[in-house]
Image: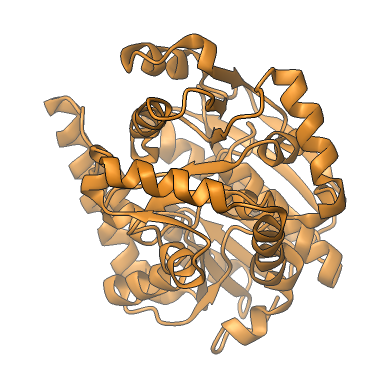
Length: 407
């Protein structure tokens, strides 16, 4: 039986595990439900490393997901299976709009047009094809394969991107990228926001900080936090290196790492020769993340200059801001580097400073920490509420789009 829904999302997205992709789609669907009463049915292909068999996940009234496992080599068959399920869904329930999430599924747009003439189809752009080839450490065989997939993906985007009614992007720079690469200029800017219904009030922050710091035995010194995966482009090794350098001038500082990839995190920490006593590594459920962020002082969000980061809008930026943290990031982080620099709310480093933190950078961090007070934390929280609250973002869709009507 097909669940009733107003939005049909067809994706190649990891909805089976707690991660940035899952949180973005879940939170966005939740905001659409709260603001407009729109329910989402997602049919998504998931890497078989994360999912053994086909699985239905009910996130709540706002979102039901049907996850289809597939290896990379089996992707064409998985897309065919997804298409069959979409056809069955559309026969039982005509939604207000279809969201295609993932470039390879743009190949379904002509089929969907024939299935439901006149339906609004939006392309959900989370990342860019350059993710496949940026970075280092690839074998020659892997790099050749990645370049082939990269070229194929770029061809699909250029050929089929203009056939949709508009695209959903996470930053203004992403909108510019899509327009430049595909000619599609009709964009809705929806950055990765924060669901403040799941966050405590700012008045509770002091109590939470004390409780969590006691729980983790963090002491009274500065606490740096890294929240995310161990993907090379997220610069965890560089984050550890920066913390280790800072700890040399302030031995009371501690590092908290929130990640599912605990073994990789342990290996990198060992390689960087960071004392285990100064680090806490935890895997926490998504709704517990706010507590651990609030206990920290500095949010590490280092990024290097490449296309992937230039158009990005990481979930953790909004979460760090909501927690009131002093954010340290790179100069090329989507729209956010400018936001931090203009508001004097964080520290923006260039690529050389990220790779090799200088004494001047370390002293700047210490100076900023000495100037921190509850009013600055509250200011960051307020800014996050004003610019990154999911419900506000969704309610402004008509304003941020040019011709696309809110489904």
